[in-house]
Structures are given as structure tokens and as C-alpha cells.
Length: 306
Image (cartoon, rainbow, N blue to C red; front, side):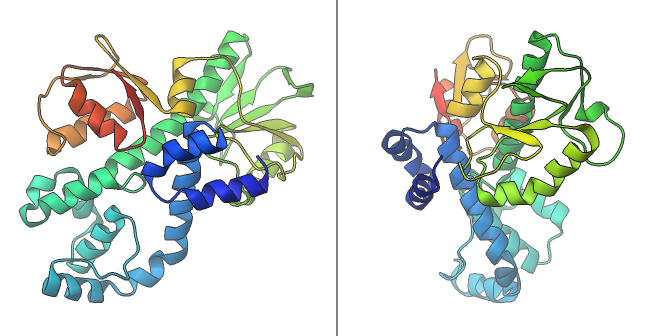
């Protein structure tokens, strides 16, 4: 992707509701738009969180006086709550618990539920969603290697410090290059993502030989191949790839995950169920309460086919 196009997309993406417009206007896949938006939010929080953290006592004082957050506190909803609860003396463990069980903190129950479903980056469900998307990218690569009959070792099997997601045990060529390792990144390859991981990629090349970096949601055309090739796809069409690139979840009668609760999304039980769904790395879900599940998943950017 050209830098000029990327800058325009990034400027147009301010909230989750902007995804549909960006997909149509710039003819990009939904996963790409979502990734750019999430990375934009993460970058902002990284730059500004400390200055807000230093004013935690002010946040608490304002809350006690107004039962609201000060207008200058520009952070995602879950991060605002974390700062407030920290100022109230709550531990990280306790904060994590109440964010998954809002009913345990009655005074803040509605506020917590609002944060859980509006924050698609830092809420408990959002963090599991982003982790699952990373794992599904790796799953696609693993399936591809198995289909080609390639002998490999996955990261979880490799002994040592930071290692690539896959080490190739025999000669394999992709786009005319001999590949010895593959790293899967479920993100858009902007300059920050590239520079932030460059020393890691160079270490792999030095130790194992040439490799491949997959930025599943595309990358800037100014990024340079070194002793590794940068690509944005591998393998064949699959349900996993539709989940990752187009953010499509299918509700079926016999999916890998089943929701039979009959409750609305504002329940601790339902929050746990959605977290379990993403932890399972499923791409389809069986649900009797289809509209409830559809409504919840759409709050995290998904297109749900029921």
C-alpha cells in the first residue's frame, strides 16, 4: 500500500463505525481497516498514557465530585476505568476481575458494561479477540505447511529465547526464495510495526537464514526486504482466512462453540462466554440466541452471518 493511501485511511478511521466506509472508499479488506484503526489507538495510548496516569488522583477527585470523567481524559473506555480503579486503591488482579464480572461492583456495573462493549482494544473481550486473530494467522500458516508436506518446527516446540513462529526443516521455496523461517503478524505493516520488529527479523535471518514475514493485513510499499521477504498472504482460501481478513463469523447449527444462555449481553456469564469463544480460536459459533451473539460480535467489528 502506498504511504499516501495509508495516511488517508488512517485519518478517516476514528471509530469502529468508520470501518464500512473505509472498506468501500479505499477498496480494502475489513481486517486491514480494523488493524489500522487498532494500531492507531494503541499508538495514541502508548504516547499519552503516562501523562494521564500521573493525574490519577485528579481523575478520582473529579469522579467523586461529578460522577463522570474529566473532558481532558482522552483514553479508550476500559483504560479510563483502570486509571480510576487504580486511584481508588484497587489491585491489578481486582481490576481484571471486576472488568469480567461487572455485577460484583454494583455502583459501576453499567459503566463497566459500557466500557466492555465500546472498547474494542483494551477490554477483556477485545484483548482475547486480538490474541485469537494472531493465533489464527499462525494456524493458517501451519495448515499451509502441512498441505505442502513441509517438515517444520513451531515456536512452541523450539527451545531457546525469542524464536520465529515456524522453522522450516527442509528446503522450501516461496516466490523463488529458499525459506528457512516464517513469522506471522496479524497486523498492518506500517513503519512502526516494521521498525519495532526489525531487530527480531534480522536476528532470525542471522541465525537461521532467509525467511518470510507475513503482515496479514498488508504493508507499506516503502518497507524493504532484507534477508527476509515481506508478504501479506500465504496458503489457500479457508474459513480461517475469511475470519482474519474479512472479519466474518458464521453462526451455524453445529459450530465449534455454542451459546445457549438466553441472556442479554449485559451479564458476567455472557462476557465469559465471549472470552471463551475467542480463546478457542473458532471461526464459527453455534447459538440458539443468534441475535444476542450477533449484536455482541458486531461490537468488536465482525460481520456475522446467521
